[in-house]
Amino acid sequence: MFPSISLAQETGLAVLFVAALVWVLGLGHMLWDSRFHHPEPGVFDGLPAIPVQRTSAAHPMESVELTEAEQQAFAGLIRTFPLR
Image 1 (cartoon, rainbow, N blue to C red):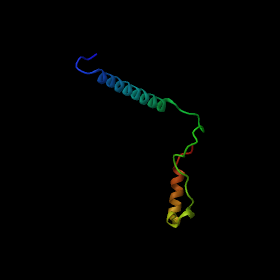
Image 2 (cartoon, helix red, strand yellow; image 1 turned 180 degrees about the vertical axis):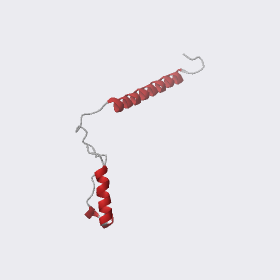
Image 3 (cartoon, rainbow, N blue to C red; image 1 turned 60 degrees about the horizontal axis):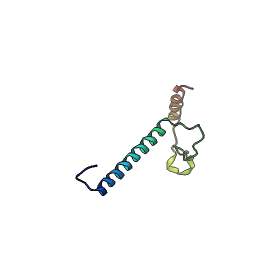
Image 4 (spheres, helix red, strand yellow; image 1 turned 135 degrees about the horizontal axis):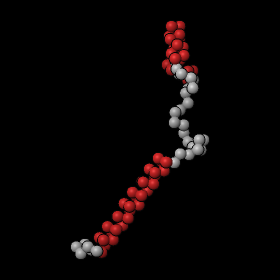
């Protein structure tokens, strides 16, 4: 093929080209699947994206006592959220 390189070098170049082509095709296939493949709900049984919330009794520094005014302000804030 190339007059300036040996047959072994040509073979190595061909193998390298094929490996790069397979890698690019595999990467494209992986990206295509992740973009357009949407499994049915409940099919994925892996770890949850957000861990469950621990109870306030888990650690004393994870709970805060609110004053009456803070409780009323929080209740007023919650009432402003639109319901679905």
